[in-house]
Image 1 (spheres, rainbow, N blue to C red):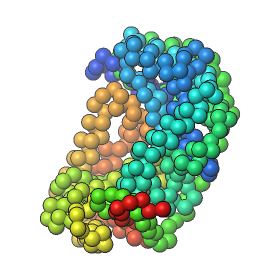
Image 2: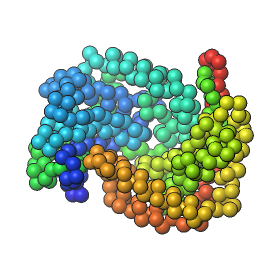
Image 3: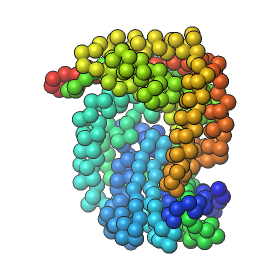
Image 4: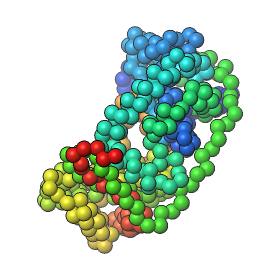
Length: 415
């Protein structure tokens, strides 16, 4: 990997990899729902949509057609921490993507003609993905309760009431504030020569003026001092339970042991929770646990379960708690520990099997602090001991630090 910083503050990360004749070019902006204010949720995601509405040089929706016409694939996504635009193309054509991304970093039209129609599209997206999906709605509501003050409590797509009230000027101001080269970085991985592409990147992006440094997010979530509960009533087939425990991000060395613990609890069908609640006691149709430490601020470790018909939510919750308590008191076996480490290592390696996957991994780590952090990941996992797993289970899977969300199925919408 080679790292360069242009005079305007734009960081460029280039990794030559010739295992396939393809190149991925990604522009990462350090802005997501984490940067939004109360009453303005959804701005980052809305702006991502509007960046496909053209510039003075490129017509509306032309960006994707140009990439496809040149044999490439492109898209974009927004998270709590970042907004990312990307395309994967051949080495001969990747210059097209470089020019297009530089153009929309500086010249997005954000035309009034497309503002209201696109707002309707986003409202419909929210209805389809959240409001009409009971489990997604439960996750959104539980997240809003788990965080009292930190912006991670807001959904990336935004609250419906906020989306309705957003103005075009909100988008223009947001674009000017955050879409500046000193708030972005480029990741490029694939079959290219650095000596060949770096001058093209400098020529395309180098003339874009540096902007004022965007404001930092200074909000710190206060420690949780007692369990919180959410009950959501929605039309659904089966009850669902979701538990969020506050956890540290990758800057804390405990994150390695927490990831191993997550796999031991619910990393696949032979994990403790899955085996006991799904196969043996037939209480749950599915059960899962998730913990992603690669976030700018501390995330949550989640445990989720969809119940079997006729099963009681309280009984399932008791079984989950009892199993976690056994980890705290009896520990885990050496076999479980090694199996979890092997699963994690395989997942980490396989995630970088493509040039796109490699670039994505590099980008996430760079967004959190420094892409070099990923070089410590596997060593950190390999050093986790059985005692470490027990210690973090006792410290972080504390009922006073958690928020429990329960989906209660109804036959019709409850107003």
